[in-house]
Image 1 (cartoon, one colour):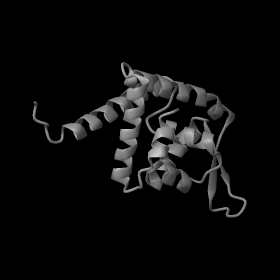
Image 2 (cartoon, helix red, strand yellow; image 1 turned 45 degrees about the vertical axis):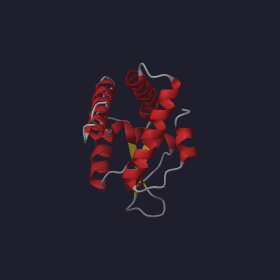
Image 3 (spheres, rainbow, N blue to C red; image 1 turned 45 degrees about the horizontal axis):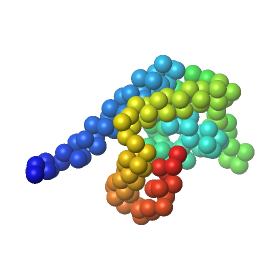
Length: 156
């Protein structure tokens, strides 16, 4: 039996993540989006009108990163900022009509990249992989692992 190479699993996980981001970035670029912009667009499509702080927290990035990306997406005509009714210092971010129209292209890019990544894996393998990745995410974020949630996620 072959000896397990320490670090090989993390190396493969890192490599798969990097390659999937590269493949997705190439597809998104064809629609005028750069890496990371898609996540903001999807988050706003699910819950429009979030503040930059809420988006940063939801996506696990620092507020200055979100602010720069929001400004770029606004310049591209995909987002609009509006002052809060309660606190004029606080802005809320909304998808524009143009932004809404591009959501389908982003979702298609995500689906194509996932299909490419999972090629050759049957539904059982895909479900097992999703469950294992959910466990890894929970371990690395010190969150509780909920097996039922992991199975729900793999049904998408």
